[in-house]
Structures are given as structure tokens and as C-alpha cells.
Length: 343
Image (cartoon, rainbow, N blue to C red):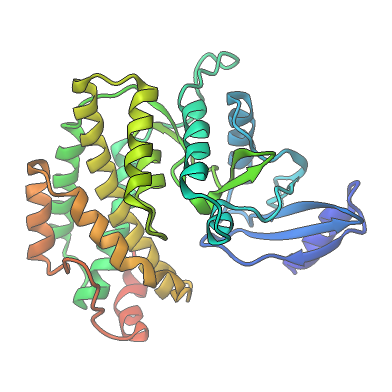
């Protein structure tokens, strides 16, 4: 049925008659098709409503295009059916290029240049950047993926309302005590799978969930990648370059480091929950292989005294230091989770 709608959508415009080939599924509800017509190609984004919102993708695409970063041009749209026809950036994601042996530091430097452009954008056309703030409600909604999916998978029990509220209060206190930094556009998933090399420029994908928030978040996403190990020298060089781009004083650097730790811990715990949810709800177990890395980075981010209450909560709830040991097989965990899942 959905394939028929995609076909009708493509045939309603100048790409009529193009050959359609479905692309591999990602971690969302979206799917993609490559439309080939002669030597030219385009990408169909299939984002079925109400699970996905193409109107938000269109809004953020137009916003980021004004910022000066490279994003796909939108050729054709049908928001009611959740379909877009986009410029095809090809297959050269940074992940593919790195696997092919392209120099890591060179690619990450291009990513930093794009991030710098994004973070220095001031949308004069709108008077302000029309995106929601990365507030505590959103921060907590993401963290609840950890309590509602990951914790039951390793303990065999749902988190009690009392313990869940305790976890939330710890994070609220940390959030409210976080010193301020100038707010910027936050991509929210700024890593090598969502970056492409187009005309020797770092170009962005998968940005529809962008918010206004901390300048540390996307740097954490880039340098503490849930899916790959990065050379420590690359991490250090990129971190220092980003601070130099910010013209950060010693005091600003201390605040920035605290933001890196806070958002690193938040992101890694969120991602651990997402990976378990993908396994249990969506039958996508491929992401489980990254959990050791994710949990290790989460623990490393929480080393400071500011996170002592959080470390104690994790230790009291038998969350392993690194390697996840699931309570039972997937079907047994699903029987615990799925009827009462909050997400």
C-alpha cells in the first residue's frame, strides 16, 4: 500500500517514470527510496504520518539552508501523505568514507566547520530562530527511555514510580544547576552517519528534530559517537579547535566542560534506552553491539562530583559498569515491558 503511494507521488511530478529502489531502513519510522531517471537521481523520504512529521523536516531544512550549511534541496512535497522528494547526496556518508580509509581528522575537521557555521547562525529573516528550546521536559522525555527500556532489560523489573521520580529529580537538579552558555541550534544527532561529503563540504542529514540548546551537545554527539571508536588524538584536536572557534576563556572552558559532561551522560543513557527499544519493540538487534561503548562513555561523563547522586542511583539499581547482561531473552523482556511501556 505504501509503495503504491510512493509510486503515485513520484509519478505526479517531473520525476514521473523514475525507477524506484528501496534503501536500507534506519533507526526511525522513516524509509527512503532512490528514484533513478537516466543518469539523474533523487531521494524519496517516506515519513508516514502521524509517526513522522515532514512539515518539521521542511521547516528545519529551510532554516538550515539560510544558515549556510549544506542540506538537501526539496524538489517535491506532499506533507499530507508524509512524502518528500529530495536532492540525492549520493552514498558518501562520513561512515562510508571512514571505512574506505579516508583520513579521520580531515573529515572531522570538515564536520567542525559545518558545526561552527550552524552555531554562529542568527536568523535575521525571522528575527529569532524559530525552534523549540531544549528544556527539561524534553531532556527528561529522552532520559525516560533509559528507565523504561534499558533498566528493565538488565534487571527483569520495571522501575518503580518512586525510583523513577527519584531519577528525574536528580536530573532536574543537575539541569537547573548547569551554568548558562549562549544558546545555539542543536542538530541532536550530529555524527558520521548523518554527515555527507558533497562538493568537498560537510553536508547534513537527519536534522528534523533540531532544537535551541547548548553548544556542547552536538560536539558530544560527534566526538563521543555511540557507533564507533574515534582516535583520541582526533578527539583532542577537534575539542581544542572548537574551543578556539568559540574564543573561550578559562572560565568559559570550565563551563563548557561541565556541559560536555552533562549532555554526554544524558545522551549516552538516552541512546542506551533507544538501542534496547529498537531491539525489543522494532526487532532491530544490530544496535546492541554498541552498548558496551555507550555505557562506558556514560560512566566516564559522570565522573565529576556533580554526578555523585546519579552514580549512586545507577549503582543502587544494579546498572552494570560497562557490559550489559540482559535479564532474559527478548521475548521474556517484552512480556515485562510491552504492555506497560510508557513510550
